[in-house]
Image (tube, rainbow, N blue to C red; front, side, top):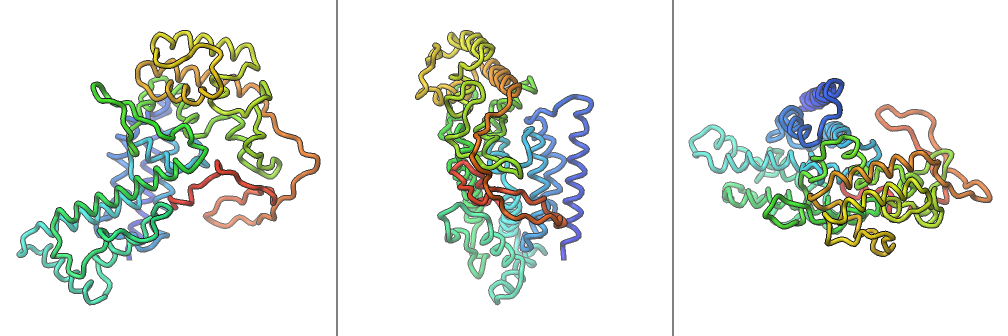
Length: 403
């Protein structure tokens, strides 16, 4: 019934997003914080148009809209189309579309419960209650269906009791509906955090404390507009964003990806292209590697500048390998002197791009899986992967939570 409306809103959101990013021809890269404001003002209204009455009972209608949302958020952050989905929402302070639309319907339910019994809207709710209690199709039944089919974190098999609508919803108060909205938001945040905590691709984001404006102490925030997105130098901000979200040019990420000509490389074999002695990870590249004199010079100059500003970190070279990860996190998750840290990350990534990846050589080629060469409309081309590939724990796990 509402398929045409959903398709029109999806198309309008895509066109508006393209128009929004067209201003980059004039102003350069659109800053994420300002871009988020424009997203909420100009694009999000299309995504939630009619969401309070048009429930997502047909997955095909919402999937296209969701893919457009992912595409726009990835473009706003400056990361590639194969990046993980959870950080798109945790870093920009947004709810995934499925949860956002359900909360819109619950807000309408709250308003109807608060309206006088003589109003037409309240009389409409009475009809919906009669249909729902009689097991007929109704708006309330669609709300329950949408809640039951929300993506849930692994381990949460059943819908919480608080999200089960009673046969006569008129017995509910606005406060109880508010609790349902909070529970939906809590499920979304729990799932997003679980996806980040269960993937080695985002290990830099584990157990982080977000720097907050003074006099507040750093605190844990699942969904928040992150402090590093406010960096003004575009290339430094994108380099730091890509480092944190595992979209960097280092071997730890690049050799994880298998294609037709390059097999998947186990994590412990993704060695540094400069020194060849350790895994080429962010902490190794930024703080430990001594395989190139230019790299050592860049690092020494940056750490000398940072030492007096970050006295609680031991930045004297050489940094012990067992402390490198904690030191890198301490350098990033602070707002005292983030710009020079971002510049260091950018300079290191640019230097590594100038050298070819060190791929391990195997005695015999690994067999590959059969692939379809016929392109299926609406689907991405098939990617060939080694048949003997044993994916380690830093592989993609997006399907565990976000569809």
